[in-house]
Length: 328
Image: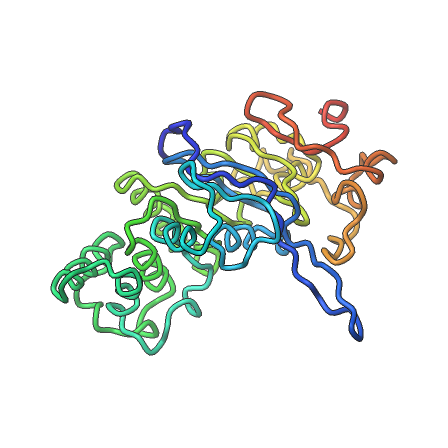
């Protein structure tokens, strides 16, 4: 993990992404996938974004890259707001994405060389065919693939190798910032470690900045400088990785971390698992006030009346909870 440079590379301000969902004849309702999320990522830093499936973390990543048009909010990159189509095109030359599923994110009809070379073609990043070929082989060597793999097709590779192809493709535009959308969740555990270590090495070598989206808290802890926790479209906690793991302040973060397996049997036996009651509400019918209140053991009338502000309760530690000082 790189040292924090304390210079925001990416700033997200009050980002909202609503999808209109049909709920009857000629009736629709907004599904609030992302509802007022704000954060920044410093140059050379990795921000881990965690939460249960369906909390909106993948939508955050895709909306930042304008794969979904933001409903509202601001996205700033290197001090410049991304607003126009030209801004988005320029931004995508410096920001790319590694997708979750290495099976469906690669075109089965294209060779590895063509998959990796596609961003070079789109952004016209070479002058001759020889230069293109040399760049493709250089990218393949970055991710541990050799030149013999260039003429093969995606189905001829294992899951881990396919994800390496996807990472090489993401590196093709020589980006500063990569959104990693659960990049190891579809891989075997033994392969996960190799790919995570490769992300670390590439960050060190190429000076990359990551938004690392995952639901596996052990993976996130290994790679992240800071960690943000999402629940039902909202950010509920953000702090340094060590602070989140050693002293989570939000009731939801406490519950998530209590479920993380511990390799030491003595510590595991003494750890108290915090079980949450009920199911996650539908984003179509989110609770009033704090979204977590229907499952929170500390909820009061105030929690149902108003959404808690996302406040800095300790230096660098932000929490959205009305009762954070009472319960900690």
